[in-house]
Amino acid sequence: MNGFAGSRRKTAMHIMAALVLPVLLLLGAGREVSAAGGLQMSTGYPGMSVTAGDELTFSLDFSNTTGAGMSVSLETVSLPEGWKGYFTGNGSEVSQVYVKSGDNDGKAVYNLTIPEEAAGGDYEVALRAYTAGEASDTLTLNLKVTEEEVGGSSFRSEYPEQEGASGASFSFDATLVNNSATEQNYSFSSNAPAGWSVTFTPSGESSPVNSISMEPRKSQTITVGVTPAADAEAGAYTISCAAVSAGENLKTDLTATITGKYAMDVTTPSGRLSTEAYANKQKEVALKIVNNGNTDLTNVNLSSTAPDGWNVSFSQPVIDVIEAGASVEVTAYITPGEDALSGDYVVSVKASNSDTSDSAEFRISVKTETIWGVVGVLLIVCVFAGLGWVFHKYGRR
Image (cartoon, rainbow, N blue to C red; front, side, top):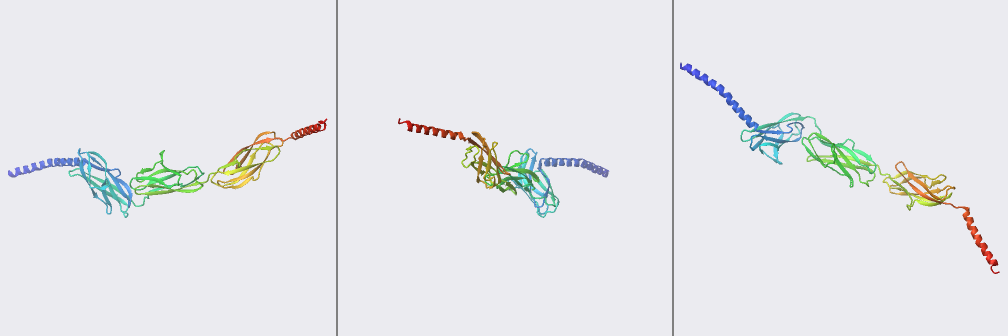
């Protein structure tokens, strides 16, 4: 009888244990979920491809749903052999952060250095955030080390050489590549000659900028505008442009070749563009051909446009060379037609070569000489001479 009762008690105890244990486990599990759910640690890019030797930074965000602020301890749970990692906040190494209730963005940074000898493959770095209570969270960083070098950051132009005449502006398209594993803020600069202007405009933007922020493994097209100085002489100019960040100094050389400014002026030594001439009589007019450009002018041809029946020739119809900033004097021989009447006429003189040209209009005042004018003068002289003889012979009578 006692044995039977004892058996019944054992059976009852087993049944109670079977009923109570799941409840206790359920309550315990609920408490852990609640505690773990009160704190969450995350980062924007927990998985990425990297290369050996990279120095990475992961901005850590925290979410606190416990309803009260708390001090959170930070630790590296697991790290591949030879790798180095530590937490920083406000520029200093830290082991704890204070997390207010709610969302806390960018509260800490995890700094990770991958050794140069790291082999290619998949790696995990486990981080843990926890409190003195039971709130905690673990963040796993999944990193794929590529065996092939992705390549360094760069700043270069596919077409780094251009040419244009003096006064022209140049526009180069360059590509800025941030091949690092972290965001970079690049500042632009150049060593352009004095008086030159260099601007940097990202694609999609309408105004130049002094700097640009770029995410890791990203590229951006930058339009580099180059405006030479107004007095820049002909020649090739190399302009070194730089994009500099805290950890990188990227440079690209651009070449702007100024082919020269071609300008010419046709005038006279005195600047006067008018003269007098007589019909059918040659008139010499001194011309001054001035090279106002910054490049020598060669094979300068002189030509003219004159009224019908007129003749115009030059002492030097072709000028071999006029040096930059210099001038050459030439004589124009202008002969009005023999039937030209008194009045003003226009003769145009043009100087030109394959690069430039200029012309000037000369006003020629034609004076007409006739035999009757001479005869008239002789008749007047004869009349006075005759009167004088008459008075001399008969005046005494």
